[in-house]
Amino acid sequence: MTSKFTVSGLTKTYGANIVVDQLDLTIEEGEFLVLLGPSGCGKTTTLRCLAGLETPQGGSIAFKDRPVFDAATRANVPAHKRNIGMVFQSYALWPHMTVRDNIRYPLKVRKMKEAVGEGAVEAAADMVDCGALLDRYPAQLSGGQQQRVAVARGLVARPDLVLFDEPLSNLDARLRDQVRSQIHQLHQRLGFTAVFVTHDQAEAFALGDRLAIMKSGKIEQYDEPERVFENPVSDYVAAFIGMSNRLSLRRDHDGWATAAGDSIDLTHAVIRDSADEHTTAVARLRPDDVLLHATADEVPLGNVVLHAGLVTYEYGGRYFDVTVETGGEQLILRAPAAQHSAALRGSAPGAPLVVSFSPAALRVFAAPDGAPVTAPEPVAVGAGGHA
Ligand SMILES: Nc1ncnc2c1ncn2[C@@H]1O[C@H](COP(=O)(O)OP(=O)(O)OP(=O)(O)O)[C@@H](O)[C@H]1O
Ligand SMILES: [Mg+2]
Image (cartoon, rainbow, N blue to C red; front, side, top):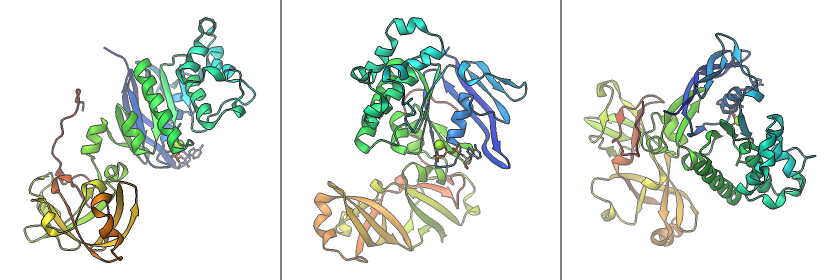
C-alpha cells in the first residue's frame, strides 16, 4: 500500500480574514494533484502551509503518513526538513549563481554530496534540456529556459513532494505548452508527488490525476478530471471549467422554459430535490455544445431550439466564436467556419439565428448557486472510483 499526504481541517487566517477554511485533502503517493481556483481563493497560502512557510492556526498535515504539522500538539517540522521541492511563477533563480549552482543548491542544503558526485545536477539539467546551459547565469537565459532550470532545481533532490505555484503563467502560449508537456513527461517518468496550483482549466485538465477546485478557502469539488468535466457539482465549478454559458430556467406549466420562453425538456434528468420546491434553476452549457443552423430543418431531433439574435462574432481560423442573445442572456457558440462564414459575414447585429443544443449537454443547478436539482448521466471513467 502506498503512503499518503494528508491535510485535515487546515485553517489559516490573517487577522479576521479566513483564507484557508477547514480544508481537507488526501494525496496518494505519486499522484499529481491540481489546485484550481480564482485569484484570492487561497491557493498559494495552502501551498505555503504545506511547505512550512506559513504556520496555520488549525488542522494537521502529514507527509507519507508522518506528521509535519499539528495545531493540537504544536508539532511543526521546519520547511527545510520537509523534503519538498518548489517551483514558483517567478522563476526565483539566484541571479549571482550559475545554472549549475542554482540546480545544485537543494543538494547543498540537504548535504547530499554523493548525489552531486554522481552527476545529479547534470542529469536534472538534461531532463529539462538545459544540459548545455550549466555555466550561464540566469540573466543569460530566456524565460522558458529559466523556468526549466527552476523545474530541475525543484526535482534534483528527489523530494517527497513537489509544489508548483502557477509555474507556467509567465510564459507565452507556445512555451507554456512546451514546458507543460515537459512537466507531464517528467511526472510520468519520475513518479513524484505533486501539488500544482493554477487558475487555468486547460492546464488543470492536462496535468491533473485529480483536481481540487477551490472556493473561498475550501475545496468545492475533488475528483478526477473526467468526472469534474462531466459532473461539476455546482454552478461555481461548472463556470470555472469552461461551461461559460448560463441560462436561467423557470417553471412553465408542467415543464421548464428559458427566459425567452423557449421550452426545455428536462425529463431525461434526475431531479435530486423535490421538483415542487423549485420554480427557478440555472443551466450551464459549453460553447461547443451549442449548434448554429442555416435553417430550422437542420436541427437534430430532440434538440432544444432557441430564439436567438446575433450579437457579434470573432474569426478563429476553422471556426467562429459567435455571441448570441436570447431572452436578455448572452450565449457563446463555436460555429465551423466552412459552413457559416458567408452567412455570418453577411449578417448584421440583431439578425435572427437558429440555435439548438441537446438537453443532455445541460447541467442544471438550483438557482442561484446551489446543489444540482438534476444529476447528469453518470459517465464511465478510468479505473478507481473514490468517495
Ligand atoms: N501575508 C498575508 N497577510 C494578509 N493577507 C494575506 C497574506 N497572504 C495572503 N493574504 C490574503 O489571503 C487571500 C488568499 O491569498 P492567496 O495568495 O492564497 O490567493 P491565491 O489563490 O494564490 O490567488 P492568486 O491566484 O491571485 O495567486 C487573499 O485575499 C490575500 O489578500
Ligand atoms: Mg497565488
